[in-house]
Image (cartoon, rainbow, N blue to C red; front, side):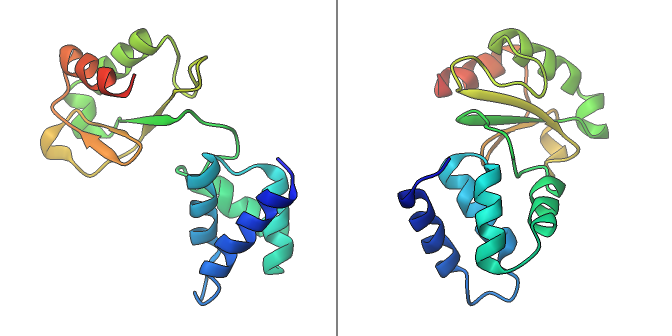
Length: 154
């Protein structure tokens, strides 16, 4: 992912966060919002522009589960597998999503539309089992409800 226009956009993103005391995470989040993942050459460029070691940039990019260094689908589905969701059926939620999307956990659909992941907690235990699609959380999931939700994104 190279090209002058790409680096100009990254320079703009960096410029927006230059007043922050520790801007790296904000910069990486905004870059990912733009391209849906953090390409290696872009991480190297950010490292050089911020004058910080590339190991630190890669460390941050790989530490946080919401940051991706590989291309992800347009819609990232995160299924909560923490205790309350597990007890209330998150395994069935995951199985239903795998069947409906034709992918396994950690995979992206062939059309590039969906990536399926698990997460430890979404913080909505009262509506377990739950999942999040990008930034929208859905709870009280059943097989039928999952199909209805997926229809909104197809």
